[in-house]
Figure (cartoon, rainbow, N blue to C red):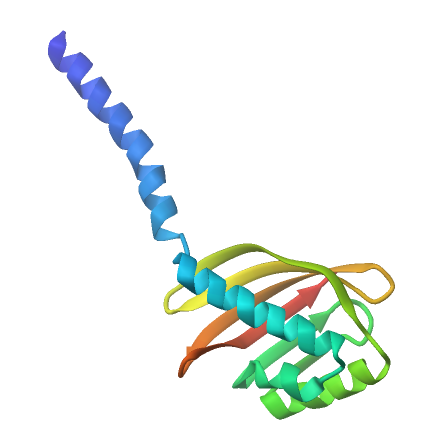
Length: 147
């Protein structure tokens, strides 16, 4: 009887410990989170200042941007092409508000951020962004935007 009770307690302990261990494995270091949030804020500030060059500088040279928002859907690759796209978009006076990072996940040496923001005319958009470390900065390697 004592053996069964002991095994039941061990089983319960393991069943509670495994999810906690899994959560710790999927947690982003608080310092990295602050760095990603700072990069995200820089990008929003650059968009709101209509500075396409500053926006593009936050993307990796080989970055890919997928815009699947229904208006001007596009697949753009390369920092220069991304700058040109933002030149056009920002020339129209576009702005971002009510933005925030919803979740961050480590993916190998990269970070996946799920965000939402309000784009011009109160259009709520969501993005999945993969950040990669380049030198001492986090840069966008891939961004997928959708409604």
